[in-house]
Length: 232
Ligand code: 6GU
Image: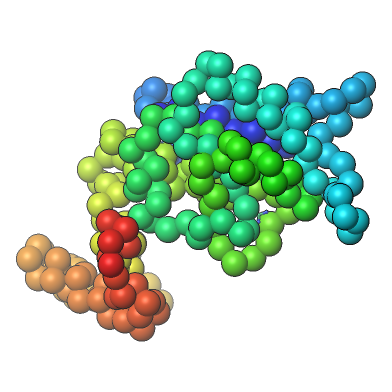
């Protein structure tokens, strides 16, 4: 999969993909993340990318022309499955959306700043708008990093058996069970006996029950509808 990201802060997007699983995915050739500095498509000698909004009001808006030029430039080389604008008024990201996007070949992400981007970009290029939650970030970059991470780890071959995404929280609309590692006792706090029993079937059953219990208490909403398939 190839993911292109348009941003005015490419520096902000360097580190998230240079470690751990995202790094390995790229080294294995399964994922390619390429950032594009919108400033290179900025207008005039100051490489302007934003301007005051029509109708008045505080805050700058990212201009249509640099974004359109950058998108068109990229589209000459790639045919994108989706052009995604990261915005707090988009559809809220969940595992189902990440699952669906992980099946795509080429994605283009647009990170907004200031008051957002000129509406004409949204109307004429953007095919999907995604938010990562009901709170406001200073820009779309951190949201893009979250989206790429959640998609990237689902690409076949990125995770090995031990880290398989199949066992993640949310993959089956259940939260993950509690986990423990050595020592078996610390400060008088014991690991549940069942986990030391060696009885794999009983352990699986215990984990499943813990998952159910946790989900019921913390996220009863997850029991409503099947978010892994997008059906309800
Ligand atoms: Cl995608 N962008 C910004 N700026 N803020 C957000 C967001 C996105 N998702 C939640 N808050």
